[in-house]
Amino acid sequence: MRLAGLKTTFNSSLTLKIFCTCFLSTHLPLISLAVYLTMSSHGNLGPIFIVVLSATLVGTIFCLGSVWIFLHPLRQVTRAIEIYRVKGHVEKISSLRQDEIGVVTNGVANLIRELDRKIEQLRRQAYTDPLTGLGNRHWFNEAAAREISRAARDKTPLALILLDLDHFKRINDEYGHDVGDKVLMAAGATIQDCLRPHDVAARIGGEEFSIVLANTNLDTAVEIANRLKTRLERIIINPLPNGRVTASFGVYQADPAKQSLKTMLKAADHQLYSAKRSGRNTVCSAAALS
Image (cartoon, rainbow, N blue to C red; front, side, top):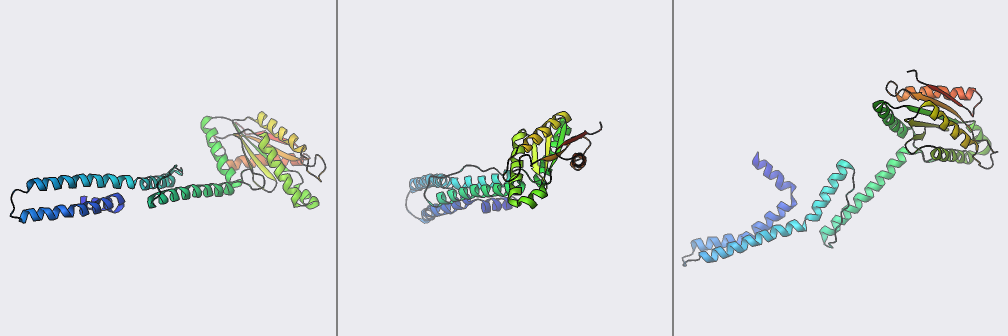
């Protein structure tokens, strides 16, 4: 077992391999001298042997220290790769050396940083609606689940808002999809501007948006929905007439300890359709039974 462990250590350590090579190379003259002195018939050559042995030991220490210093950047690179693989954290590493190891160190460091930027860009694309800048449905499901778990754990209120732009298909049909896209972008910007930093908002359908309001009761959620309704009415997009951009709102105060996200969305959707049946551009609300 011990032999297998030494073999594993040797195979995984470049420093040990280089040191063993240098050690054997520097000790060959000493071994040759020892053999010569053993077979020689000359007088007392002990002092010579001691001097050569001492010089060899000093050379060995110098060799090990040099190898350790030369390979230090590679150990930094190895550690940075492992930290990035396990934790996703990019460590700042760089080398001022201009030799091969310096080039490799800086090259790998740049590659890790570039890889992290690309992964972050892909992550944003995977979770962000490109038109409005809000989260998409996949991101919303994850973020909302976290908020629900936190609210259930902390026993704090939680509310949902579903809003649907009124007669959005008519805008696309009458004015074109370019105008429709501008309406969606303006709606996304309005939602972002009206909400608090910790609120969760996403575009979950063509013209449908969903918002999770943490630590928020029904009255406050209705106030936020009405504020959004008023701000949407003020959006001006040519050639649409003023006040053409409106939305219907379904507000629901959930019970995080007993309800799932699916159940909450279904209840909020029920209020949304009540708002549509009431003539649109209105807010309907309800709360979970305690």
